Image 1 (cartoon, rainbow, N blue to C red):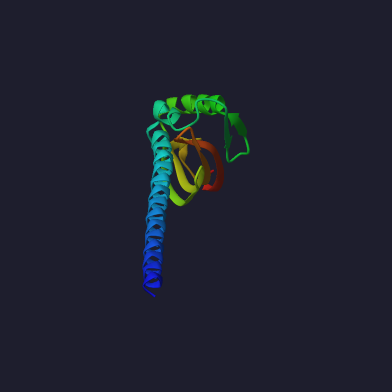
Image 2: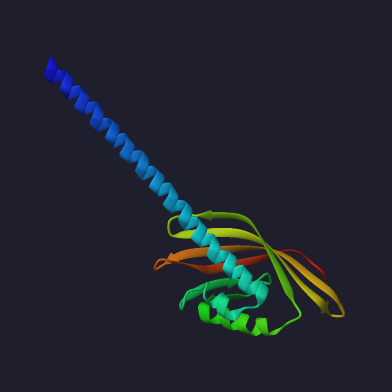
Length: 163
């Protein structure tokens, strides 16, 4: 009888420890997932800030060093390389009259990838003799590459714009 009692005490103790270990592992995984999401979103925010500030080096730090980057502009023009994306932005950043504001509307982050939908408002004080605005929704794709989050895709769609 005593040996059964000892057996059940040990079994209960083992089960309690096992359950506690699972709870700790679950908490660790949740914390790691939250940190992963924060790092992904920090990269996107840096990317958006770089455009707002027309900061080429900052923008460059948020994309892969080489390879593919898919950019689709509202008019349907598309480029598929990091080099083409960066060259377009290098030229665009030289123009000083425009400004851009961003607001992240939705995001979802997974283990190695993430995406976000952003509202963007491009303004120019004058285009064709009058003020110009272009409101867009832009979807961004991000990928975890060698431990660093990189923006690898954006696709802009027009919501409304001035003539």
